[in-house]
Length: 379
Image (cartoon, rainbow, N blue to C red; front, side, top):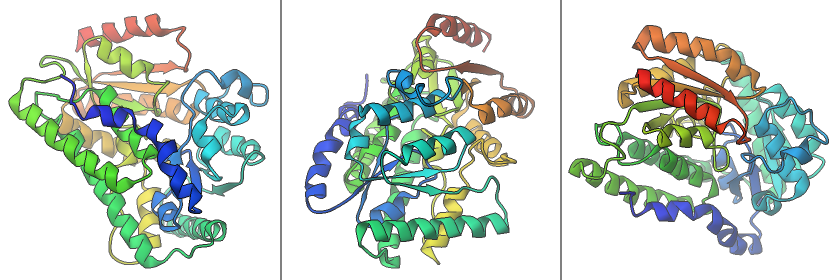
């Protein structure tokens, strides 16, 4: 039985456009976000509304390929395709955009995107360390200045502190929702967990989103305790890692669960990476924000020990039977990391890994289904 409250998460993205109308009428700006490195605390402290932008469907890719090379990651092409075709309502609603220099393809795509709407680019260092921390703090300060200029509103330490506490509460609640699947009864499918985490990017009111998370957590705990509403009591438990997925690009996640398994955690940046780790609530709020966001273990970081540490934690907590590692075509950083992840999971945890390289199109669905089913048979 699917948790009854999931219907509210299903509709959050659609309600966002109606929810922001009165906010825009009162002068609030909407800031379009593409990546988990964008500090939403700063956006909200400036009185603006952050929204996740489209980039997870195949339909707009042909339009993007008139400008961008075909042998580019589908996420980048889809993001740009939505912009040039004006078919993403959230992009249309955004007054300005924020990007980050993660992979090479994305940061060059932003040069084209900035010709369509005002875009602020945060330059991300490719590693951690004292010098890099100081550099990234400078980028966070530069973003603060940009937002203050765009909104005409000073970002105070008090406003930042309030937003830090609120976003930390959302992160704790998402972790609590995930934790309900640690036991033998998994009350929430991986597809539904994706809906829950994705809804965070389409919530005009984070207080309301947090309240809905509390209700979901309570319902899931009751279902898990009763043991009568498990996704599947004997399903193979899968840890999904690699590139992000979302509505329109969830074909692999769907195939895994259609094949009788359950994704107990998605380590990717549309999953656990988006809410793992809190911002320190004491001291300089800008420095605390910079530290938290720079620790996100994206494959653009080198070395990227944080990804292996997060996988270790999720393995201990969620007890998967196997790992599925997704790489979108031409996503070189995740592709290079795939053998590192596979060797680590086998040597440290005795877990086999299935590496899937694909794109957004459905042409290979049945081929992928055969590979997934074969993998599940050996677990």
